[in-house]
Image (tube, one colour):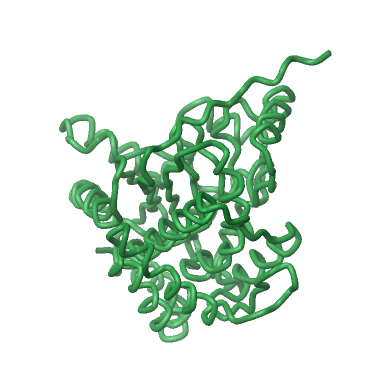
Length: 377
């Protein structure tokens, strides 16, 4: 007999709190290329005893910094938290002639010149994944939302996949890669799923199935820690949250607030419906997979599959109705203005479209990078 399956405790959150992780790249102020200057940034942070140091994290590559919030109760609180950290980091990066860049990919930076952050965890990832691992010049936004009980997590997670294309289309910001226009609104989504534990989650019905899956992953050495399950949406048992990792990198706090509010409202809405005894709708994995591809390829122009009957609709039309339906949820969570701002994002130009506009106007991918840097506020 094999080793017994260890239980995975879920530290339920008594309230639907939120936490946000915002990945930003470091670019040179003159060349606009990526620079491996995170060690210099963290040396400044350490040397000066920066008081928000705990909310500024290293990432896989030395061209990246991640800003994280504490446990927040509202979107406004999370945005204020991130804003304070951003102010600190921008002052420090200015001293090392570096700008912060918020998008899902960089238009032209070569992977071969990027340096790995020190640490066995990252070295082992690259050793295992090789060429695909070294290609991961990608940045995203991760949103945690607290869930009260373990038995709610997987039904909410599976039902949330219905809204995957809405979140990806809204945030798509990675149309260029290695000096080429890819034809995708989100090339990041396509790249990240190449890692062996990344991509769409399995749609388990019972927590025991998730425990059995994790047991097999640990037993066979596929992962050494639960955090190495890098699904686009995943449980975070030690935090008592569902973590949504669908979105591309975001260039400004206004759009970030909209994405976070939509995520918060979606999960709380599903949680409340489940509590009220409703059986949450789910879609077959092959339909979810197709919707992910459509949103990555076509962005805000995607025609998505809505249900098990394969009804189809423009993602913008479905999103408009979704925003109306979620208004009471947003009001109860104190994020009505932030949720309403999603409609403004759609009415304008999505990041990937703005990048194409700059390239068409100037013919310069350096100018594309500069336009994204200029959007940061």
